[in-house]
Amino acid sequence: MEYSENSILKNLKLRYDTFTNVEKTIAEFFINNKELKNLSSKNVAESLFVSEASLSRFAKKCGYKGFREFIFEYEKNISKYNKEEISNLVINTYQDLLDNCHKIINKDQMKKIAHFLTKSKKVCVFGMGSSGIAAEEVHLRFMRLGLNIEAVSDSHRIKMLASLANEESVIIAISLSGTTKEILQGISIAKSNGAKVIMLTSNRSYHLASFCDEIILIPTIKDLEAGDCISPQFPILVMIDVLYTYFIDNECYYKTKLNTLNALFKYDESDIII
Image: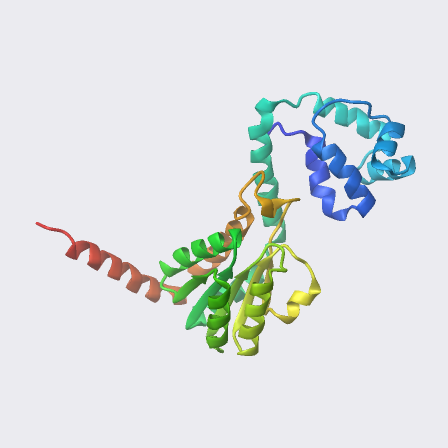
């Protein structure tokens, strides 16, 4: 699906995680700039306190022959920018994240986690802040399939439920940053009690592996957690939807789903007055 987004900005966003700190400074300047100005290598270098050689290396890393070619394409694109295109920027941000979700999905991992959920006696979803909203959505979706599942966003309840977890429990922890203290404490307690721990995060730090049985990586963009452009729950829920699909593809879930649906229909029928 194609939109009219500034293609050079899209290129910078996609490459952002591969940049050095100096290159990230340069990239942020061009991503945030919304007007034409003196963009000579000398002027940009002085403004950013970087060398002109750094600008040249940056341009080449972005796929251009040099900084002059980069600026030519940048000015051509930025001149088309206006406030009417803001909606396209939002849509393209969603599209970029969706494309990145597709790239990092691990099918074998999803099947494995779906099996964990099928065999579990109790599932708890930990999340705080915006991740807590996502946790509640996970709770509602999987509850309809018959899972004994609960969403928890209170720090005290996270610790209490983690302490009650055992070998038949599955903990799903959601933290984009992967550094939320209350979440890390909770999964550490649950893991020590023998629970299976699944974490959804954009943090690629190897340190998290000691807390988790499986880590579902979530694609992200700069300042996603702030929610300034799009909902930070979006990439989380995309990956949850993928897991949900693998779960319902598992034959073992049908009996529990049927029991749940029968209970709902029975309640609705008893409420009818003839």
